[in-house]
Amino acid sequence: DTAVSQTPKYLVTQMGNDKSIKCEQNLGHDTMYWYKQDSKKFLKIMFSYNNKELIINETVPNRFSPKSPDKAHLNLHINSLELGDSAVYFCASSPPGGVTEAFFGQGTRLTVV
Amino acid sequence: AQSVSQHNHHVILSEAASLELGCNYSYGGTVNLFWYVQYPGQHLQLLLKYFSGDPLVKGIKGFEAEFIKSKFSFNLRKPSVQWSDTAEYFCAVNAYGNNRLAFGKGNQVVVIP
Image 1 (cartoon, rainbow over the protein chains, first blue to last red):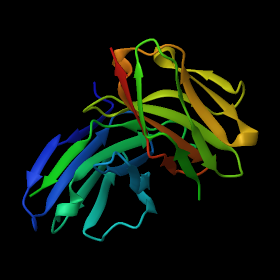
Image 2 (spheres, rainbow over the protein chains, first blue to last red):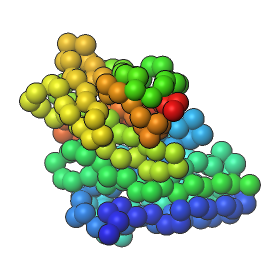
Image 3 (cartoon, rainbow over the protein chains, first blue to last red):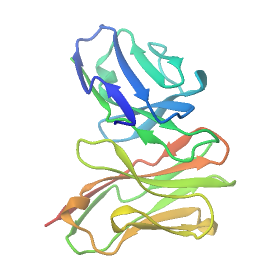
């Protein structure tokens, strides 16, 4: 019973393509996040949703569009992929009341060729 | 905005040696503090957390961390490391009441058998 699950785990695609990464959590949390981890392992928050509402939107190209159909799901769609988008993308969730603990998914390793 | 500093990005030590990783944050208000570990090829897992109370926090796998408010620090320690502690370690800070979890740049720890 995976708490935060992401699909796919690996994604290799060509420049210019559009791709999506899906995330689901079965913890009953209200808040979900997308983080990007670059080749130097630096973790940077991209988006945060609370109960389907966008609350954090960092300086991310508008080719990246999150979508939250319900509070258990937060998907990430990326248009016109570029080489620099290659990274590991982590989904996470946390319970209500501010961040008490973030639970992370397994990550999606995106490689753009 | 809160920020987190971790120094000595690469740490190499032998089994049974003691480990201490520094973490400093910049935020004047109440904070929640975390250390996460990322084993090679895996997702982030929580090692320990501090919200309030005893500033010396014990986590899993023999790790502990001490919150020193006057120094804005939350250093991680383990008295005797094992080869299996080889991983990336991330300090994270959440300003109380907001949904942002800010990560440091991580410490890559390699334990030599």
